[in-house]
Amino acid sequence: MASTSRGDALALPKVQCPNHPDAMLVEDYRAGDMICPECGLVVGDRVIDVGSEWRTFTNEKATKDPSRVGDAQNPLLNGGDLTTMISKGTGAASFDEFGNSKYQNRRTMSSSDRAMLNAFKEITTMADRINLPRNIIDRTNNLFKQVYEQKSLKGRANDAIASACLYIACRQEGVPRTFKEICAVSRISKKEIGRCFKLILKALETSVDLITTGDFMSRFCSNLGLPKQVQMAATYIARKAVELDLVPGRSPISVAAAAIYMASQASAEKKTQKEIGDIAGVADVTIRQSYRLIYPRAADLFPPDFKFHTPVDKLPQL
Image (cartoon, rainbow, N blue to C red):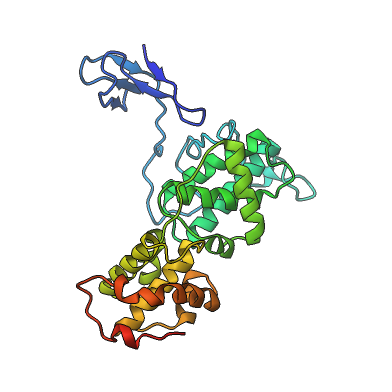
């Protein structure tokens, strides 16, 4: 008999052998059985073959779908894969005397599932615009489902909740994005995303790690086209500035932008404040304010092996 491990509410039941739970089950496609390779126990039977009924060739029409079991199951929807869709009729018997189709699809999907499906599409669109991987999309979908089912953010737009969930998922997966980056790929204001972010953390009783300058440094330097030496110097400068408490109260993004500006000015690959500000999403004046705080200790901030193209005493004072 199959034993099922109970995970969280969103996880699918795991079929495993009761005697060898760590064994990788072997699937017999002909008989539709799941067999334990250690003891030969048939753990599961009547497994549905989700493959195509016959081979698909590239020269066939796109309207032909040889798959007989429909789309893949979506565990986030309640029975979303148990509906029947009627294809468009082509023969004369498919239409009445007025030319209307005799057989039509009814709206069998519930309003809650429809709202979640629209939100999942919006999340996927936003993630694709900033090149986020699939695991972040899945985590965002899970977060949105939890918030939606709790009804703790009633009255808030689903797009705003989806944007905040995407921001949280990025931070939980260790690839944080700024509020401005999320705002740029959504239709929601930065202020509204920030409000939903705080409400979701409170509703789900979860937390996110504090962001640091190192979380953004490699991405900002890569987008600016800076060499590895400048990136390492900027990372070192930002870390030393925080350790020496030179930038109290400053956001990690503005400190990272100021460190990149200082490192680039000391190298041959010089970048202006506007170029850095456009990539980091901060204003020129914000970069200048943070730069002025770290400039007096500039000689102590650079790594010992850094090769100066412009000496420290020749750096712009602003």
